[in-house]
Image (cartoon, rainbow, N blue to C red):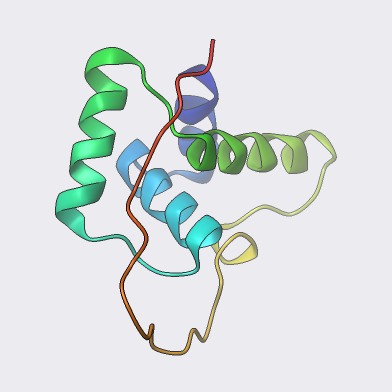
Length: 96
């Protein structure tokens, strides 16, 4: 939970926006707001952190520690072609 808060703070964005960007980086597409809200609620209420969000936050913190330039564009996939077919379901794993 600390990595999400710290990465969001350093990027000057909300934790929810960090989840959205993490989903984009992991799955290559934007998440439905309803699905993302459900997963984010699980994170806020129970501390359940999806692996894709944790990995994204850790990569932001690693880049900052290595004194690399960090901004959202360096972690987002730009110029995506439209998705064909069904979106993957959002899932999460409990990390301790």
